[in-house]
Length: 369
Image (tube, rainbow, N blue to C red; front, side, top):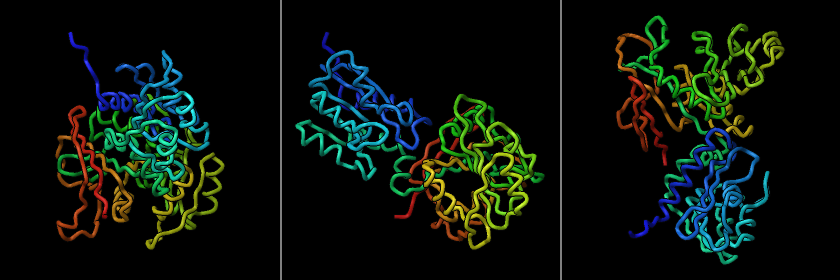
């Protein structure tokens, strides 16, 4: 029987599969997977497991059952060539005399961005770049946005009925979506750096904004509250995750309430006001970027969703759509001042999936060139 052979795409897919194991654990580093191949077989594999730990290629080398000399290394992202939490990976690759390196995509980090490739080639190692590149870039869409702009990747999520309502006219919204959709939302919480809501959502629903329906870490919670209207007895101010709660407000906040909330253990972040006297969401996102938060999941309400879309600050939208009709009710998005269909917000790509009885729309917003 003829021996089955595998190509570069096959081994890169294996590296991508490994990289996904680090989802939600590596920020502000990217997710990276690596496999080492000799004589057509994988002899070592690894991924970046968490921030500060060994990088994927080092873990793959450590895992290798045989000497990696003259082997081929497949890696989803360009190997680093600078000192950070760990030494440069290119040094180890060179030292181990790996013959060929196949890279999914370049690292946009200015400290790397082609320098790792150049160093490998200058040391006689054959390097091929761009194998399954779109898949490798999609894997780290949060990281690419963060490194290039200093701003976190922003995803808006809300559940709605088939006729586009997020609540009845009385404000009842629990629960529009199915249990399966709810689990998916908690998964999204677990893989994002923080979850953001407006104070209206807190006063109406009193959410915990934690991860409960899946395994995963609780994200940082950001409450946007320009006048500091949040009730002191809110769930987000009285649980064991207070150190993970930030109230973004303005100079309009009453000083007494600022002190009371600080005494509870939450952080008060006083931001600049926009032209409407509310928290400047652009400045808030910049501040989160300075704190190395790569991604934000926005779960409402209408005011904050509308403001973010108006300001062109949204990267992706995820919308569970329940097969229900309620007629008059609350809309997720307010007036965007769009009067012509050709001015509508469009998507560069999108997909749909089924969760329980619901359909999930997931789309990446098309940005102006």
